[in-house]
Image (cartoon, rainbow, N blue to C red; front, side):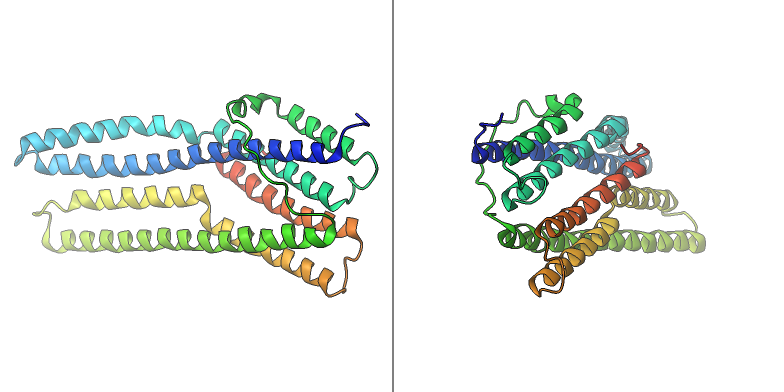
Length: 300
């Protein structure tokens, strides 16, 4: 392996990183769709079931259709939930872990810092690829149907360009936009659940004052079910936790880069890149560990 061409080696690892990244994205997409389906089906079952009961003595045909819809929706909930189970979440986080580790190795290699600063840097890179893939051999099957999509290598050639095209890019194109997006999604969930809580309180008040002549009491339970489904979806997606993590990581990377540019510290190339990758890795590990803990899966 001593004769391996370095540009060919790093390009090969970069293309493999793309495969693992897409496999992780596909696994995450299935989980998110499953969570949305569980929430949507739960809501649909509650609404259709209550409406069927309310219309039973007025629109018998419509009531029967709604009852069937409610039963079907309720029966599909456990089917949709399979995509969000422990094994699915664990597979996703492990796929993402491999993808991020390969990405970090490629950037370090291009920056020519440890452990890729010596004459055998391409050999070290390929050995690390082999070790990573061997460690997740049970997941390789999730990547075999993903063809290689040719991607240009990052335009990094040394630590100065690493600062621009890795550290700054992560902050401006990933962490800060991600924090804003998570904040918006968390705000939507809070707004929706607050509105539903108010609606439930109003319905309860009306029933308490006027009685249940309008059949509103049953809809109080529906509102509670919808609220619970939305809260559960928001908790599973961890929008607020991700917002905090992204914002914290962006701040850490920004301060690290500023110290380097201002000549106020981190002048050692190896130490600087290692610290940047450590911050990114800690952020990834933090939210992956939190995801696994929320799902009841031991972090490995």
